[in-house]
Structure formats: C-alpha cells, structure tokens
Amino acid sequence: MTVEQVTAAVRPATPRQRAARAARNGGEPTLEFAERVPYDAYVHASTLHGLQQPLSDDPGEMSFLMVSQIMELYFGLTCHELRHAQRELRANRVWDALPPLRRAALHLEGLNAAWQGLRWMTPADFNRFRNLLGEGSGFQSAMYRHLEFLLGLRDPALIRPFRRQTEVYAGLTATLAAPSLWDDVVALLARRGFAVPADLLDRDVTAEHEPHPAIEAAWVRIYGDSGPDNHLRLLGEALTEVAERFGDWRWHHLKAVQRAMGAKVGSGGSAGLAWLQRSMARVVFPELWSARTAM
Image 1 (tube, rainbow, N blue to C red):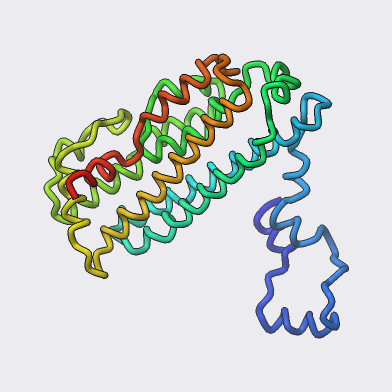
Image 2 (image 1 turned 90 degrees about the vertical axis):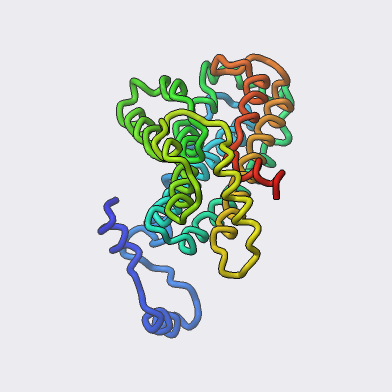
C-alpha cells in the first residue's frame, strides 16, 4: 500500500472526532470498516505474520526463525535512531540528540530480551533443522552490518557477501564510507573548542582506529564538569548506554551460540564461537571508555 492508501484506511481523527465516535458506539469499539481494519493497514500485521516460512516440520524452528526476524527489526530501528542522532549532532543540537540515543539504548534492551526466546535450544534441538539452513547465517545480516558501521566498527571485507545484491551492497557501501556516529561526536568536540588534531577529522572513515589521547583528554574535561547545563556529559552517558547495551547483545549472542552449538564451525563458514569471541574485543566508542581511567 502507498502512504496515501494507508492514510485513507487508517482515517486520521481529532480528539473531538474520537469522542463523537465513542458516543455513537455507546462506548463499544468500532466493528465495521469499509476496507481492511485500520490497525492492519498501519502495522501490516497480516504481512508480518506471513513472513515465517520454516524449512522443516520441527516446531522449534518457528522460534528460531521469528526471533531472528524480530532481531532484524530491532537492528533497523536502532539504525534509524542513530541516524537521527547524527543529524542532530551535525547541526550542533546536542540536547536534541539525546532522545534518539536514549531510545536506541532501550531498543537494544528489547533486542537483548529477544534472546530469551531461544534459551530452550540445546544442540539436539538446533540440529533437527540446522542442516536445512545450508550456509545461511546471522553473519550475513546486512542490517546488522549497517548497525556496526554506524557504531564505528568497520571492516570493508564484511560487505563482500552482498556484491550480487546491488541495492543492499550500495547501501552498505554508503554507510561504510560515511562518518560513523563516533566520527560525528569527535567532529562536534572539535567545533566545541576541544583540542582535536586535524588529522583525526580527515582520517579514513572506512577503517577502525585505536583510542586517541586527545579525545580521551576531552572526555576527562567534560566529565569533570558536573553542572546541570553540561549537555556534553549527558551525551557521553547516552552514548555509554548505547555502547553497553550493544556489548550486552554481543555477549548474549556468544552465549546463545555456545548453548546451541558449542564450538562447532559456523553455518556461514566462520569459526563460530571463536569468531564471536574475537569480535567482542572490538570496542564501541573506545575513548569514552579508556578516558574513565583518568577521571
């Protein structure tokens, strides 16, 4: 459906119109609609519930499939919030960047909670349908790669699997080449007068970097000011929440893999558990953490 069709089906209403409708219905919900029910027109619930297509008759596969889809939605939602925060930071609106960052942290909490739906899965449970997945693996999630790139975790090699999906590959290439959220934070600090070396602002954004003493020093200064108007300190805490919740997700991912398949080779060709353990060593917003030693 187009936006116009959705709007027509949902029938936007003012508070006065809602009150009049309730009065006509005698307090009961509306039960007759000219087309599809407005809830489905807006949420597309019938479409969502038609997207589960298990490959086996095993009843547990539905949990695995649907939890994976829920996580994909959370990846996209978190990316949406981080991009919103980037726009505000680029416009020097630090206060306005805080709500999307706080929402992103809460979405990551929801993402973490989704793992609970797979705690029942033993290796025997997973093995009943795992072979049917072939080389399919969460490693191949394009939206997760967008999320990593936005957080500053960059590895250009990881977009190679998508080369034959033209639009997906183009989107990933664009996110990889654009400044990450952390790049925008560093640029903001420079505009606010902190001693950020020029080479940090001009460095290759497609590569990951070690913590820099100048950025660490900036955060030490920021956290040294406990005044209520210190929006940069609030920004630091909002970013910390995002980084911590993302780190929780990586930990839960590792434990879920360990629970369901031990140290077996991953479906996508990786070393499985060992790959995840190495990836956890990559730190999100590194100077925000390393600076705490000097605070």
